View 1 (spheres, rainbow, N blue to C red):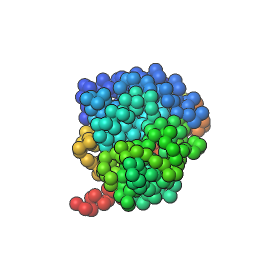
View 2 (spheres, helix red, strand yellow; view 1 turned 120 degrees about the vertical axis):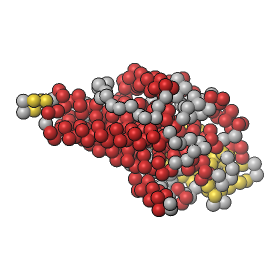
View 3 (spheres, rainbow, N blue to C red; view 1 turned 90 degrees about the horizontal axis):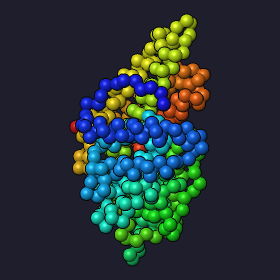
View 4 (cartoon, one colour; view 1 turned 135 degrees about the horizontal axis):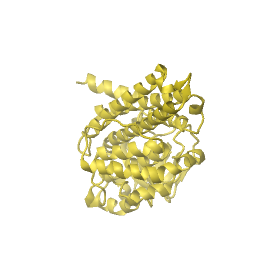
Length: 383
């Protein structure tokens, strides 16, 4: 792994957070980094590595200790995503889909019986989870989704399709949004349910160490106790979870940008041109200086917002702003790294081309840049 550039410390921290960062960083150096390039090249998700995170108690970081979670907060979640993404953004995206889109989302919507049934296997990583929201004809406009649910006796019948579902090929349990009498409602669907199937993996530009596919529901019958929360309560579940999802993605942006900066600095001190290290050339100094400033701004914004977010505390304005800024800044830093390394940056050896490909996803997934701009403007003009 490349040497790390020293940077200022996030303002929002505790001894527990510091210990968590040290634990995850050590895990990244010894377990994540050695396998990262292989899984990007093969387009496969390392399920075994997820189970190692489960053994460390890092899947249920936002779940209360009383239910076998770590009992930590959104800041802790950001630390994990930040550190993991420094080495393997694709794997981190798969972790996010499991730990936040399924586990966190499920926990805060589920009743005690549902938690008892599903939590143990997903907290350990023995069962992989995924969340189905986007559809072939509906992305950002989630209220326009076309998937339906109808009550039939003691069951619900689901019909429709979901697409771009991270962890879809590996998951055994899914949190699904559908319209029940035109009201958004949340359900749990297990893979072996009759009427449910998945398509082959969808090839993609970046984040290749995570996988995605479509989910297909054709008269898919699930028992009534697989309803999460209340009928029509899906919008509350969705909006509550979107905030910590966006923070996780923003934190991934920090990790990716930090990695690219470290590569830039090391390369610029070793590579010589016109008789001196290229770090002494003003053009290179601009790329490095601007990148460092962007990372410090990302770090301050994301961790400051994370301190204000929890299951009972909302901050849509802050989380939209954090992801909007961090997504674009991370892509710019990755692009700068490719430019500083020149031909080496465009090739795979230093991996910055991968981080540029991976960073683009943050501008799309979990809310597009345009969605964040819309939300921010709406909230500000509403006063």
